[in-house]
Length: 472
Image 1: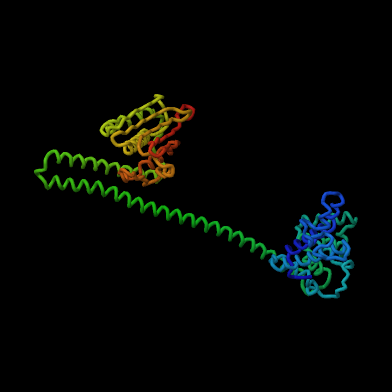
Image 2: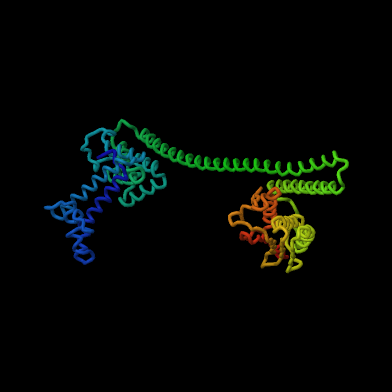
């Protein structure tokens, strides 16, 4: 009777004792059947003399049964003690241990009280069973008792010892043996503690357990909420960083053309005798920088629309081949001016997809403009290829530039990403073109990726679902 004992200690003690018993008695019999070699008994497993089953830990002079009993009980007791010492009792274990070990402090009377002679009122037995087991189960148990004993409890006031023991047995299964014993004791003898007071004590214990479980649930919810708040905080930090990057990049990109326009305009204004040829050159640069400024502003507006949510643009069946051809024609002169060889191949025409004409035109223009920017200087080559592959319209834009490293092939579709070139340095632009292109393609239910090897150019591949009457 040790109040500090725990359930884990008892279980591990039993397992240890059973294990020693099995090792010293049943296991050696397997030598006779040939399952284990004779060396197992004579020299122990792996030749370890101390582990010989009939002389365990060097103990000699005792019979096999005596030795098995000694070591199994020793292991049982030692493991039971130390596991209990280093583990904690649950609230229920503390309560049951106190009730079981100190049962006599909760009741008066001789310790020689004969449980077989206990008597109680039938109505009290009924109240107990209904209170702790529920009225349906309580009545079912009493009806079963009446049928087995062939009696009518309604005609009896006093319950005999059999009924008292019957009730205690079923209560023990619900509230524990020690608690059932003290509850039954309170109605079979005149105790200073009343039945109602005992109910209150047990109900309070039940409430404490429920409160403890509620606290555990709240703690788990709090941990989940804390994790969600941390994730939200990280997202806010990331948004703040992106905002700062956006302001820095856009400010820089706006300042460069504005500074150029301002400086050249000032020269033209303050130099009346400026040669006409040089004046035209400066005006050409001013127009070029103005167009660059316009493109940047349009990209920023497009970015804002994309980030604010899906656009309310009408998607309708359009000829993707015609869109590609118009975009290509609009950039043909620029490719000629830069001595870039160019080729357009359209295998299927018309090639209908469900989309927005302006947005898909922007996709094609962005990809061809990107190819122009990174093609080899003086010996550039660009191929635009449109075909149908199954249920997808596939657009490929290929250049012969420096190519893209594998580690950068996903990075280029992020905002403000600009890859530097060893020969050309950082290219002009905002780093928004491919991000906007990727977003537009995604809004059309398609996907975009790049295939490239260093020094072997790059091929951007766009796939958009084909429109059919069934898909309408």
